[in-house]
Structures are given as structure tokens and as C-alpha cells.
Length: 455
Ligand code: FAD
Ligand code: SF4
Ligand code: SF4
Image (cartoon, rainbow, N blue to C red; front, side, top):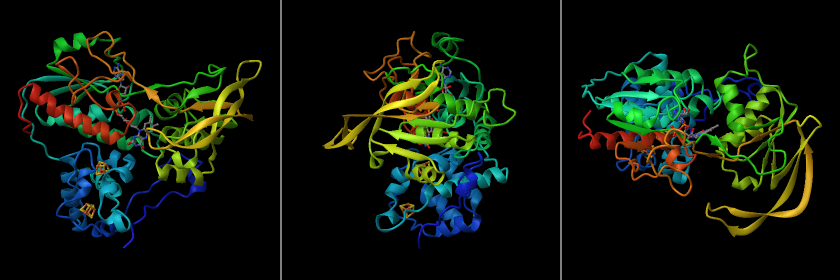
């Protein structure tokens, strides 16, 4: 039996709206897909999941039509299943290890997880928790998946947890980065509400390092978890990089997702360009490109390697192609061309050539040629990676690595009462790895404070 494909919004229609592209399984489709699972005695799939969800167990419950038990099992390991079921790169994680995938299609684990989480939301399912307060206080800095997962686990262990968030809405990249059509904000807010419902406090509009220092927090709390992510965009060192019309992908996505710039009534609308060039080839580049397409621009992604090396998820690439986004490979920007008023009018680039040599990321190296060309455009979006922002801890004794990431052993930093995890220790990675770090931090904080990890 082949994998049960998920229904999608039609490509011609979806490129004009911000509604979710993937429509999810019906109950019948979920049961059909669950029936393919072999319920393996030694389930390799679990090893591929950074938070070790008991995958065969919850799939077995779906097979039997017992959705309540299925979501209960998922919640034992994950507080963000509707999010992870949607955006996890499952093909590189749980599904990569599924035995069914060795000779055919792996079980659609992510889609089944999403089905259960959506079922719980639609049916107002509330998990029953029994929390015994231990009167110890923890501050978490950052409300992305890492901070939220750590908060959930610590609260379940009885801690009094407060999250401090710099932005006016919680969720980190889930809220300001990943677009509505891949991850509806109502779903993110619902999962955050569930975490608040068990007693986690979230205080927004507090920039730690400015509004309050880490030393002040240390006086009030027994331990601190730094979950500040890696949200500082990298720019390119090329002529006219400050021209009007050059944006980082993070800025465009924040304006659209967080500030609602795609809505007609938005107070912070974006001037819609005719032709946009997005520089980069990762998920962030594809998200920015698909957002601009929906706003009505013609969009081209320019990537300095070839199509094979594109780091974005295959599904995202396929969806973008279906949505008429153009792609140009083996080209690298050299100069931004500007009008008299210093606004973008084009891009000069150098053509690249592929070499046989393989680099440390296991991809073919590229080299610049001496052939240059130009293209016309009125907006350029840079999606070439991010660094961490050290504002929260730069005046503290917390050490960083040569790459500027927070130095950790497990999740312990160089300050014994401060822990860290997620993108700020790994560089830009994935939602579920950030969740995994949050769960691990909760365990290590509990051990540091004399607990035995007993929920
Ligand atoms: P973040 O999500 O970055 O959260 C950090 C939070 O800390 C933010 O809310 C920030 O405002 C807050 N903060 C920072 N400094 C301070 C301070 N001084 N005081 C108070 N608060 C502070 N991963 C996937 O798995 N699948 C995808 O499809 C995917 N798509 C992506 C698309 C985009 C556009 C982007 C940008 C990333 C994507 N990722 C994806 C990566 C994933 O979102 C990140 O790896 C993940 O969010 C990291 O989680 P985090 O909790 O470490 O950090
Ligand atoms: Fe797979 Fe992600 Fe779900 Fe884990 S959380 S089972 S990796 S989809
Ligand atoms: Fe089911 Fe695949 Fe996991 Fe086996 S490895 S239990 S078939 S999901």
C-alpha cells in the first residue's frame, strides 16, 4: 500500500491567498495510513525523533479510532504536536528511519501526528495534568519552540515558570518567521495557550539585556534557561547593500506574519514590488519567495550552487515551483544597482561553476567565473543565514564559541545557574531540535536543583 497523500490547496488558487497549503488527513485517511504501520518491536522511527515520541503506540491508537489516547501518548513527549506535525523535516528524522521506507514509502508519521493534534484542537480536548508545586522559580528567556518546550516540561515537574519574550507575541520563529500558509498562527497560539493553561507565565515586550539584566533575573529565580534563538540576519558585503528595497528575509517575514502586512487593513503595509529577487536556497528563502508571490510580485530565487544542493525541504521546492516561482542557479550577487534616489533597480551577479571537489557539508564546491550579468528588479531579499543575538547575555560571564554560539555542555553554560539550548547553541537548525534541547534543559535544570525528574 502506498502512502496516503495529503490533499493540497490548488496551486493556481493558493498562490493568491495565505490559507494553509496542506489540508491535513480526514479520519478515514488517517486510519488508512495508520494501518500501514507494522508496529515494529524495535521501532527505529523513535530513534529519529529528537523528543522520542512513542510513534508506534500512537499510530496503533489511530488505527483503533482512539484519538484521545493517541494525543495523550504524543503529549507525554511533545507540547507542540500540531506545529511539529506540520513543519518537522520528517524525511530527515522519524520517517527517514521507518523500516517501511527502505523498500517503499515510509509511514507519514508527521501527517498522523498533525491529525491527532488537530483532532485535539477541534474537539477542545484538554489533557488532565497533576502538577505538584515545588515552589522553585525558573526564568526562560525567549518563547520559541525551545523556550516553550522547556517551560512545559519544567511546569510538569512542579516548577513556577516565567517566560520573558522580547516581541509582543509569543512563539519565536513559529509566530514571526514561518508563514501562515505553512503554519497557521491560530494553531501556534492554541498550542501556546495549552502551555499557559498548565500555569506557565509569559511576559511579552521584555528585552532581556535592555529592560532587565540577566543578573537581576538571577536574583529572583533559581535557574535561567536561555532560548534566544538565532534571529540576527547575515547581510552581504556588496556595493549598495543599504539601498532602499533591500530587505532581510526575517524583516519581510516579520512584517507579514507578525504585523499582518498581507491584510488590507494593516497599519504597516508593504509596498508591493513588481520583480523580487530572493538570494539563498534554504527554507527561509522559499518562505520569503512564496510570501512575496502571494502579495502579487513576480519572484525569482537566486542560488549560488545548483538545484541538487538546495538545502530547502523537497516539498517546499515542489510547492514553490507549482506556484510559479522562478529559480536561477549558479549565480551570486556582486552589486546592487540603484536609481538616483538610491532605490533598487537591479542586480549584478557573477556566474558560478560547479567543481568535482566536495566540501564539509558533503556538497559539490562552486567557484566564481569571470562572466558577469545583470537583471532588473525593484526588491532584493537576503536569506543567506542568521547569527545569534547576544543582547540577553553579553554583559554576563557566559562564554561563547569561535562561531559566536553559546558554549554549552549538554545545556549547561559557563554560569552554573544558567542553561541554554536551541538555535543559540547550534546555529539556525530545526523546530524539533530546539524542542529536544528544551526538554533536555528541563531535565538538567531539575537535576541541578536536586530533583529526580519525577512528574
Ligand atoms: P526562536 O524560534 O528563534 O525563538 C527565540 C525567541 O527568543 C524569539 O521569540 C526572540 O524574540 C526571543 N528573544 C531573543 N532575544 C531575546 C531577549 N534578549 N530578550 C527576550 N527575548 C528574546 N524549522 C523546521 O523545523 N521546519 C521548518 O519548516 C522551518 N522553517 C523556517 C522558516 C523560517 C522563515 C525560519 C526563520 C526558520 C525556520 N525553521 C524551520 C527553523 C526553526 O524555526 C528554528 O530552528 C527554531 O524556531 C529555533 O527555536 P528557538 O526556540 O531556539 O529560537
Ligand atoms: Fe517526527 Fe517531528 Fe513528530 Fe518527532 S516530532 S515524530 S521528528 S514529526
Ligand atoms: Fe511503524 Fe515505521 Fe515505526 Fe515500524 S518504523 S513502527 S513501520 S512507523
